Image (cartoon, rainbow, N blue to C red; front, side):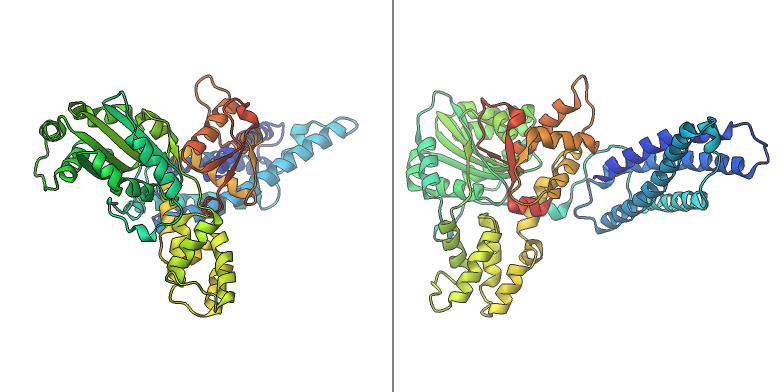
Amino acid sequence: MGLRGMISNLLSLGANLLPSIIASTQAPSSSSSPHLNQNHQMKAELEKLMRMLERIKATLYDAEQREIGDLSVKLWLKELKGVLYDAEDVLGEYHYDILQAQVEGRDASPPVSPKMKLIQVPYGMLDRIQQIRSTFDEIANDRIALQLSEGDGPKHCNNELQVAPTSHFVVESNIFGREREKEKLIDLLSSECDDVVSVMAIVGMGGIGKTTLAQLAYNDQRIRQRFDKFGWICVSENFNAERLTKELLESITGNECGLTNLSTLQEKILREISGKRVLLVLDDVWNEKHNLWDQFQAPFMSATFVKILVTTRNDHVARIMQTEPTFNIGHLSAEQCWRLFEHYAFGGVQQNNNPKLVEIGKQIMNKCGMLPLAVKSIASLLRHEAKEESWREILESELRESDASNEIFPSLQISYARLPLYLKSCFQYCSMFPKNYYYNVGELVKLWMYHDFIESKGNKTAEEIGFGYVQQLCQRSFFEREGYNEGNDFVCQEFKLHDIVHDLA
């Protein structure tokens, strides 16, 4: 369960306990009764604890945005989780005692008032509550040193997770298995279109080869003959019209531009592409705001036609921008993956003289889940390792530990970091199931509801909101749809996580 979900449950449990404690303090008894005094203290401590939990819950909105790259925040979250478990144990035990007293009160003959049974606080429980609250005080104070705020403020950017910029250059001899997709993409880019500006999006999970496919098409001679002007920009998270227009102008002209004013930049773009056939590639797009996209493409109408190829992990982004159907890119076949693995692990030389390494290598390749980035990264690591023991170590280790090149998981963590906060716990929860598990939409949503992962919104039911969560995870390439059919009942659809995405969760 996510930390905010745990705190919500504790607050709910505390709210259920308070009436019983208050009732016990009002029971007819001597004011000097030690039991009565203990319950007054218990009530005060529990109320303080709940106020502290509310503040920490608010702070978590800030902390969870930074948990991937900030090790000190990670430690803070780990300590917090440990104390939450302690609080859960104490309040759970007391709740059990209250329920037991109520049952005994109902079963007693002659009847005994349940309130009379609640007066005694179990031995040592008040001390445990005080100790937990004291620890929470320390944790709450630590947030000041970590510069964590209590508000649901703006998302923190983590420089460690910024995507490396891409260019249109590619070494085709290093690419395996995209021949059919390349031909299909070139046909689509070469086709006639009624619109002056047409947009096609390549959609797929991180590391699957979207940028590589765009590079192959962009550099193909047939495409070079088809268009007059070309531009390639790596967009990434910050969709800033001034920056992107400046970079696009520099890409089209090949000259550095010192301009910063958007109007002036767009005027120069308009003159550069007027009456021309233009191909633009916008790599790694995350923008979901239609107005920013409209602002950026304003000068393109001066061209004869503009074909724009977008790469994104988010199907929703594609639907905001595109005028053409989505181009979905799939996994490599086992044969294609092995050719890629051979190229990077053995330098393209077949290892017939070392069948043991071939056998281990194919097992490692399968472990990479046919994801090109993972295959390339791990194979490159093994290139200068001739010992069988070293290969077995990689095979038997966790993929995260094997990722010495630090490529695979940072690439995927970017997708996680850019998830809305309400989806993070839902995604993490999926790791509770084994790899290759088929999630039924209806069942998964009910489990999320049970764990309080679904935030209420407007007049929608929790189930309807949960179905929206599943759709968003599909759009963002976290879930892979199995046998998906638009005509089928969405609740009955099944989905799965790619093996490496499961490792990430």
